[in-house]
Length: 367
Image: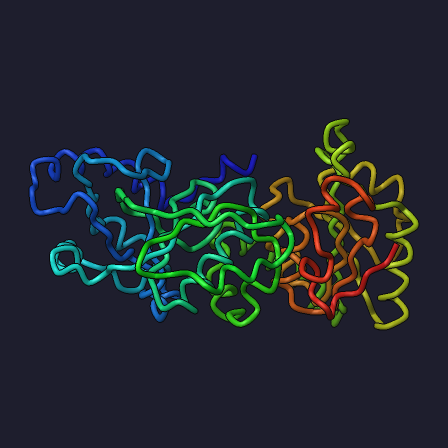
């Protein structure tokens, strides 16, 4: 379901890509190892130095010798995306930057996993690039393009990358602070820690602005309760794939009804005139295990992306398991209660996690 949410911007880009690639094939002005600046969104213009995208047939390409072809941003794309893009980099400017070797040092990442995982990886990449004062090459990704106001428009071949492998998937690795930038780097791992980007929260929040087709229905739904002066608490209940035998053996754990009752009671006692909006990949289970009350409603959306956007505009959030709920809570920015039973203590997943690095210190753990 998530992968089908391709934005209009991306569809138009694909439509025009073939035509422009053919016209550029005969050009000998583009260096084999070209690195260009992307046409950023309006929200990211101030960070243009750090943000570029790469795509070759949907995948990152390394150590190739063929010429790099860059599709032009068409006037049709500009007209449709005026509100999103702001200003676009013209082809002549791109070519000049390549010829003059204005972009030398860069850092990129191999994106892996689903949305919550990818968001951690992008946040770590951009914050690292900002700290090192180098360009971040953001790999083009259909999921990212369909979710956020990030327009991916380029095919770039990058070479001579040294890989940095994190030590643990959910523990801050301080070795990332000591890169030798006489060479270029690619990050390998999940980088699931708030410590990687806590100094650049404004940058990350600008990056993770959902596309209007995702954010607007979420805003409209939440606004119906905000107009009633409600304190809005989002509740995300992750179950689904965490219940498979394989994931259970790894240590994934799902929240219990008692945890949900306890966490909701916490907010009822702390705030008045409250409403809980419950989102889940298993609404039937939620309806069977969370008491239907005057102060809770269930998400009406079938699209998990809209659910995350909805969580992001709640006042406070309760989460259970997984990175999807984590990001909904982090984007909301209010009080957060998380399930301490995730992952299962002593499991393989647990051994790769430092809880203090994964959960921000102001978040509240409950069982």
